[in-house]
Image 1 (cartoon, helix red, strand yellow):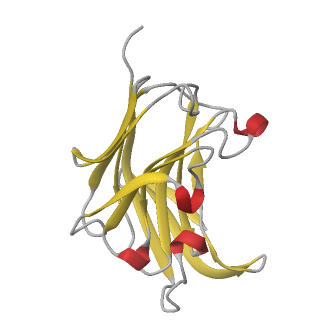
Image 2 (cartoon, one colour):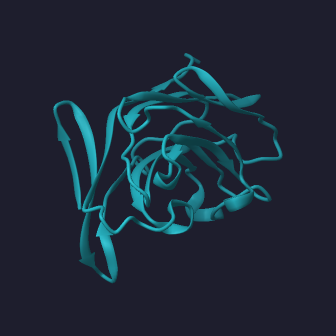
Length: 190
């Protein structure tokens, strides 16, 4: 597994190798216990890998996950891309009664997700959550007191291989690269 900074980019690399019963190693980076926040604009400029079975993501979890569990803590998927659906990106919200395969989200096909960098953004406020790709709105939901999006969240960047959503991994893949140029959080002064 490899996680490195090179040429100003965070590079998360999945490598085909046997490890503890799995056939790939990869990495993630998260701000849990170091940085969390409530409301704001979150931007991630990234290029996702190509290949069936790749599953890169930039997402957020409620900081209270250790006490209430998932999906009660809430989850905001800024972007997910599954290699089995080349150039299709997802923006999704998970919460009680709308999680897993029943989540609240949308997808968008962008012709060059794997060859160009794009800006994936969430505009999260007390009244709404909006998810964008290059400033194009792909999903919007009204935020209400009945759903868990009114407390602090932390950020996760990871590259998974396979899984229920990622699907079967192409046997020819030896390595996959997820590149992140930046993650920015903007909040209003209080």
